[in-house]
Length: 408
Image 1 (cartoon, rainbow, N blue to C red):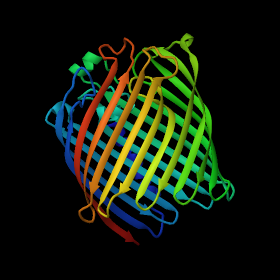
Image 2: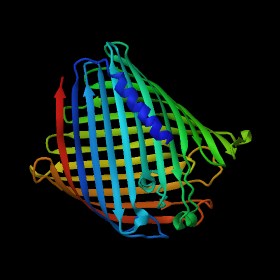
Image 3: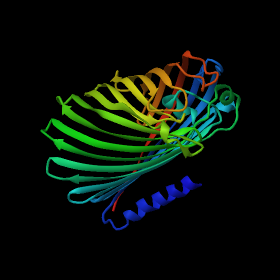
Image 4: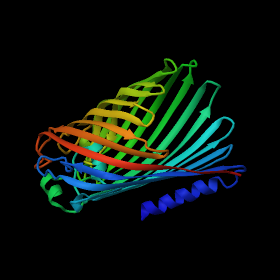
């Protein structure tokens, strides 16, 4: 109820913010996808290899209002799944809002979101530890201010707040693996700048600070602070590249039942980095790169994750296109922690083929192979160390609605 009330207040704030704007353009559009999926190991476990067949429904609706000074956008998404094993049924909903208010030299933005999900869908990316019948709720607000300091220089200030919570009903999978998902509250503030060095080259820098407070007993509060330097370069009209990197310090404070233990404080050094190369022409799109990030996780530990990714798509004919996405990542605990060290290697590859039989219609088939390797301590009781994999096949039929556009 707390999240719903705050979401409604955010919607009202966005709407009232734009009441004084004059000429406006309204737009509304959406899409609907439905299909079938088979997964031979939906639990992603060597202990409980549950194979499921299910139905998927994915609605999406976008609404926007634009004026000379103000943009307001709203998006609602759903991902509803029903399987022959009802334990893995899943309802994912996401509501997002974004405001942009422009003056002569500044842009004031406010974005926010509220989502509910069966937590196993997000745990695939987070930790790979999955349990059925477990729900998560997330709430996020991020205002920002961009000031055009000179014709070539920008200063950007972006604070943000997010909160994630989990429900953990007792079930056999959770009990056997010792899973106890822990929520967190995260406060962050970034101060950065952009400099347009030339038409092709722009430089950027950022100072970062975050405070992460985990819920539950025997957890840690962590302060993250650091900086990064970066650049973006447009090689030609088809190729572009970007890079950034910098150190990130993690100051951890252990606590037990909400009581701080000062003697457990520690300081660790991590890093953030990214390298991205993109190619885009009429028939082919390609991107590849490397990222290194530090983020909170559902197991009450802050994880440093390094990833290598490749995305590729090719339009074979006017109505048929191929695509391939792949990602390899390694996650490990960073900062002092009272729980066991968490180390995970994860790999996924997903080839697909899409057919557009008519305008706004698409039929797509895809295959997803996922693999992970754990090396855990005793706090994850019966989680088998070593390799686990899964195979999934999906067919989706989608319709995209061009919507309506009204100017007044």
